[in-house]
Image 1 (spheres, rainbow, N blue to C red):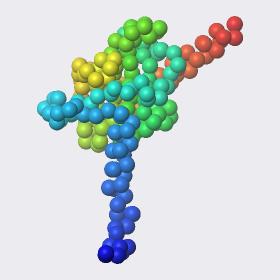
Image 2 (cartoon, rainbow, N blue to C red):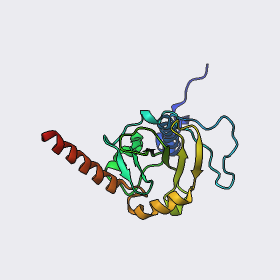
Image 3 (tube, helix red, strand yellow):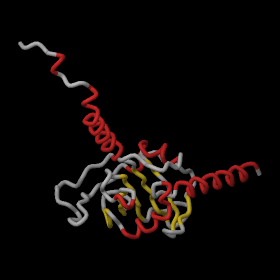
Image 4 (cartoon, helix red, strand yellow):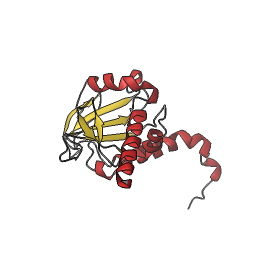
Length: 191
């Protein structure tokens, strides 16, 4: 039996890039709680984006308690966000980490009587779409399995370009709206 020669093991310093990539990809996949489609075929050959599924989106932490209005979507929505993105969203960060996931189920009314669709943002690796913050967009049914549109969706990109300073997310406006809703609820409870 051969003895282990400790000097032949690379130092942790030289392994940092490999370990970081491995850790990030593992966290990303665990947080995503989803897998690619069963086949390896690209959904959109021009975009080089593989279709993702989000069957466990309801298990992600939800930021809001009451449904929030969306003028852009003519709907109401909730915000589900993975742990990787939560701190950046709350801090209205200028840069979200790769692997950040934001899921917004859209409802026709504030009572959340039915889910019209899911809108999803996923922070991709640098170079995916550099001029638009490297965000991937998806529109899905309530199950998170059936995609109607995904990738570099022009209408999503155009709207989110308005908030480039918060890494293409409406976090400042949404958080202000959440605070106002909570204050109104508190006032109603006091009466």
